[in-house]
Amino acid sequence: MPERTTTSNTRNTTDALIKYRRDIADLRQRIKNRRFQVAGLFGTPIILALAILSWISLKVFIWLHGDMPNAIHGAFTGFTIILAIATIVQFAVEFSANSPWRDSETSVRKLKLDLELAEERRILEARRLTPSTLERQASYKERIPTEVVRLRKESRHYRRVHLLMQWLLFTSSAAISAITAWYDPPQPGKGALITLGFMVTVITAATGYFKPRERAFNLQQTADSMEQHITALDLGIAPYMQEDAKNLELFATSVEGLRVEQRKREQQLDQPHQSRQEVI
Image 1 (tube, one colour):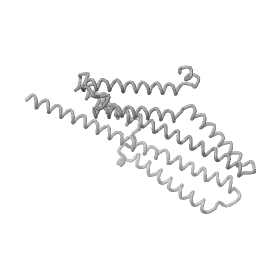
Image 2: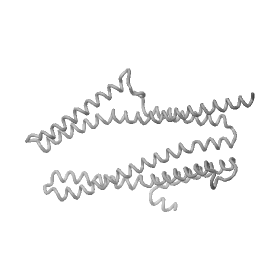
Image 3: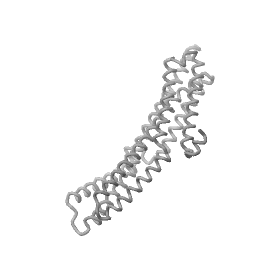
């Protein structure tokens, strides 16, 4: 009887932890969907306003004393109508009583809070049933894949920011030369050159200050190192070739060392260049 009771409790614990994992995965997907919905809700009206503003600007600055070509006029008309319909439909769906959107009128911040609470409940449930040091280390091991996912996500974010900055910098620099060679009169080439020169200066300064490339590299390197330790522990290869208790202790020590090094690298990137040289 005691063995059956223990087996039943273990099964119930496993089912509860699986349910928590499913809830966490569902919340992550809901957050992605909600971000897409919010982007459509706010992005479509903004694009609509920019399209109308561009339409008016072309008419005023280029075809003020003439007729706008029918092709351009028709393109702006169709584009504006499509955006207007999309805006109305999205707002109607968002604020409808029977909205097909699961999280309509729900902020992404609230969903993120629900996700954090669900992850915390899963960790606390695992810890409540594993009070020993060995089992707490095992629970810590289960949290590391989430940390790896977070690091990879931040790394991709900074890498995309860096690529966007570089492409804007390349495009603006090339456009400056092209406009300089193309336009003889001061306008509209002069205004475009001022704008592009401003963009090049801002992008260059932002890239040097925020260092998205270095941040992406550091985050990716830390995530790869953590994943290497997880794989080594699961396979029982060096340096995890001892007893389970010693392996988990070594794993926790190694991973915490990697996280400390990552925080130090982030602090070094946040410091001015002169301060970093003094620290080194």
